[in-house]
Length: 211
Image (tube, rainbow, N blue to C red; front, top):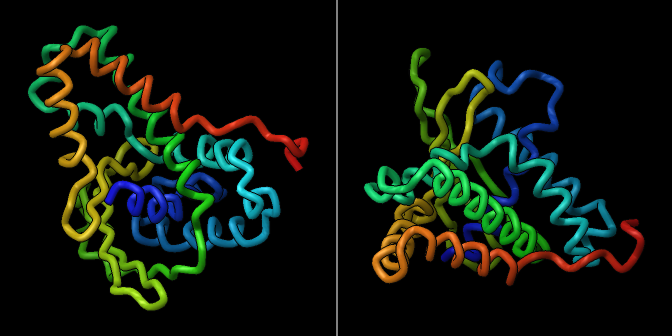
């Protein structure tokens, strides 16, 4: 399930590419228009087509970091364990978790083919600060996959803090494995585990000069 998540979520990496300030754009419009931008990049960039992982990692790092609230995501995943962590541990947890997600996105993005994405009408009141942007992935010969993005309004625009695939939440999915690791080896053990997992999926250096 996580591999599907990483591949499909990669289509939303273009949020920061627009000149219009993000906080002036409704979350569904932001997702819909920028998704098309990313799809265009994937189809036209020859380095990405050759599965140049360094190039893909560069794209992911540039596009995803400004648009996800990794601090809130990490806090939600840790749940009650978050309050037990020291300030230093919290910083390390956020860093290692975001590193793991960014590197995993990079590895999964190269598997992009020709799936299509359709965004559903947004149900939102003018004063809503927390919304769900609903979409559906359509793949040839397969059943549609529902992808829902939980987003909230910040002074810097709308940020994603959770994603659900067919009703399964990313936060909930990681929460169980994080809690298990903490029970076995503590918070420092979780930090070490995240760093190890991230290293395993770190993209290899480019061998074509980055072209």
